Length: 306
Image 1 (cartoon, helix red, strand yellow):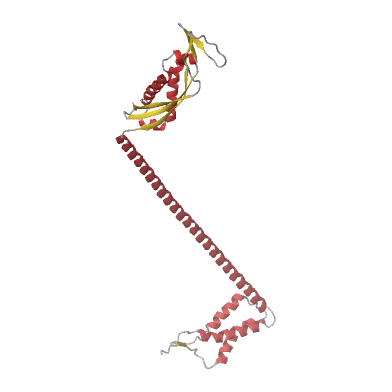
Image 2 (cartoon, helix red, strand yellow):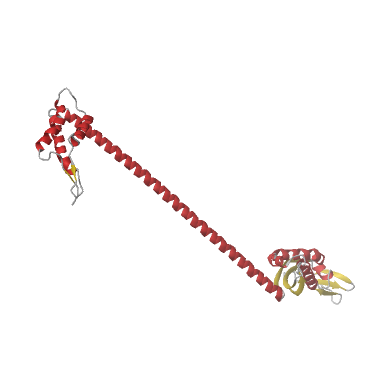
């Protein structure tokens, strides 16, 4: 409380025991040192892009110097409220409508800073300022709503196009990987097939070479030539059964009645195998087989049409 004496300004009455002189001393002002909350009335303000706004707020302050608050200004709360309103209009005029909604925290801080610069002489400290409501004209509100909807549609279109692009990329990548795997599988199949065919050819060649070696060794043994002559004679006789496979064609030899002569002729071809001084090789044996299959007196072909 502030003490005021007759014809002069008194001092500050602190807590505890204080003595007052009746009639001469009296309490003139009582200031609360607690935090004070003041509602700032709604007022009109124009933004940087010439949009009229209706805005109100809440001011939080505290009296730091009761003497300045009592004798520096007539009504400190009213003065701070008016200062908050003018400061708020001034700060709103520096921002566009979009920034007013996006930068409310920055706007509140600027208002508090401006109030503290002016209220320091009044012994008052502004702690914070909060904007409660911002009202815009109906037409502006409708245009803002349309803008928001357009922005949402734009984002939806962009997201949809990105999804389509990603889907197409994934499908193309999948096809690419499938083709790569298919070509690799084909390549491996061809390699395996070629390797198998090569191994089969090698196996056949090795078997044939082994058979030729075994036949050559058998011919060099005792009575080998006689056995070879008998085998060739049997093949000569059986060759006539395979000369014709069609039902309307029959091949007959010129001497079909003399079977013993045919065998004798086959045995004569290989009679040279009985010579001890001559070594029979598989090549010679193959030539003798061809001669036995096609003798000089070849059979005459007679076609009998059914």
